[in-house]
Amino acid sequence: MSMEEYVRKLRERKALAAGTTQDTEMQHQKGRLTARERIAILFDPHSFNEIDTLVMPRYEHYMGGKSSRYGDGVVTGFGLINGRQVFVAAQDASVMGGSLGEMHANKIVKAMHMALSYGCPFVALNDSGGARIQEGVDSLGGYARIFDANCEASGVIPQLSAILGPCAGGAVYSPGLTDFIFMTEQSYMFITGPEVVRSVMQEHVSQEELGGGRIHATESGVAHFLAHNDRECLLKIRDLLGFLPSNNMSDPPYIPPRDDPARRCPELHAIVPIDPGKPYDVREVIATIVDDGRFLEIHELWAQNMVVGFARLDGYVVGFVANQPMTLAGTIDIKASVKATHFIRVCDAYHIPIITLQDVPGFLPGTSQEYGGIIRNGARLIYAYAEATVPKLMLILRKSYGGAYCVMSSKGLRGDLLYAWPNAELAVMGAAGAVNILFRNEVKAAANPHDRSQELADAYQETFNNPYIAAARGLIDDVIEPQDSRRVLIQALRVTLSKRERRMPRKHGLAPM
Ligand code: HXC
Image 1 (spheres, rainbow, N blue to C red):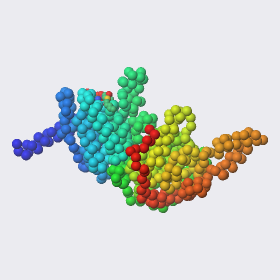
Image 2: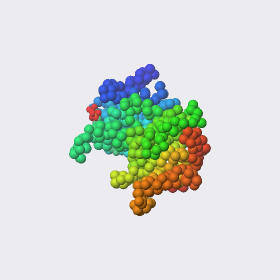
Image 3: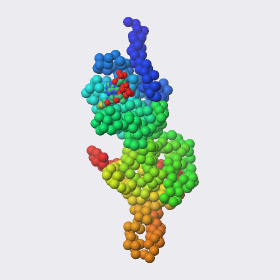
Image 4: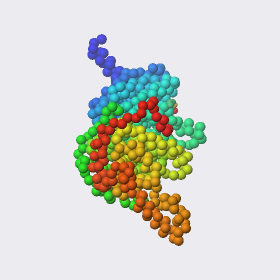
């Protein structure tokens, strides 16, 4: 055979391997893109290199000639996203529902191991019916190896998952082990589908209600991001990667700032009402302080009483954790604790300084919280803050009461540089509650209980509910004018960026789970 012949045969095979394009129509009808179309949007133009194109399913004879023989239903490879190397595995739902067989799993595990060896982020574009039924235990073994690779890579390279179609069974646990999950409105994920739910639990539920993108973004919190469609989802992934380092040995991408580091923010006076009972949107505070007003919120639709996300200050990536007075008065509940804990762990793993904005009346009380384990979940948040060795800055905007004060980046938890506005209230509790406990009898015995109660509350407010007692004890490092917030936080960031903190050696701590 001549070289031309060899090349012609190779091209034939590769064309077969790329043959999933015949199913483009089917995917488009469902409002979704094919694996290769998704890759084309995710990566910088002409930068993608496919590997294992010629891998074949070992149990090819089970397939009745229906599937493409090459590729085994998943496209893997590497390319550039915003100029940085990233590995991908994109499942092809047009090959046996994107189900996972042995070789399909091998391809994914190989790409993950390469990403880990070369210190590159790994992105999984999931569109899979779970374990390939025909391949039985080989499929299950494949999932176990993927889960193991997920755990091995955890905290070493960023791992992002997109759910872009129906994902069932084993197809949901690999995403569940990754750092961030993106879903589209057209996707769903569940460990067992509606049929099983109906027969086992006698519960009638649709796929969307059981595990649609919106449900996971608003109810379970499993999805960190929700997109209208595939394209928007893939662009969001590109956006998020812009805030993450390639691996835990490198720093997040620095972008020389255009925004003045000394810029004053007088608009903060109008955004945050002096009256501690009045709500406002803390995201406006963040947008005012950070470079160019750009804030990438995570878990935007879930546990909205806590706001977390990435931004840049003076060009450096920082993570914000902020109470949201607009929802549940900014109290901390189980979901908010879980949300902030996850985010703090991500920041700590990837050298991202954490900036905490406090305006919190305390933990949300009640039986539903106690029965749900607020003690365990609140403890997770404490553990995450205590264990984080990245720079920890904090600014108290208004209220800082009780346990919430201790938990959220306080000095006792090795917060680095902590600030408060002059209207801040740092105390065990608010004035009315304190008077009720400390002076109940005195108020009851007074000629005019209402007036006496008010008098005592005013006195308590004057004495305790201010930032100056904490400042006098060094529990906060300074009281600052609101308009100086950006300048002060940038100065604090600059000095703490060189922070090197070590913990006692141990196999691992026993963080509450
Ligand atoms: C083999 C599968 C498959 C599977 C789908 N297909 N799932 N083939 N193994 N797991 C095939 C179908 O037979 C069909 O082939 C094609 O993919 C498209 O499937 P449809 O059902 O027509 O598509 P759709 O209506 O979009 O529904 C998608 C779906 C549904 C919701 C994913 O197919 C489904 O419920 N699949 C089964 C899900 C499941 O129970 N998986 C096993 C989980 S157990 P043809 O030839 O007709 O085109 C598991 C264990 C691991 O994963 C646990 C580890 C912790």
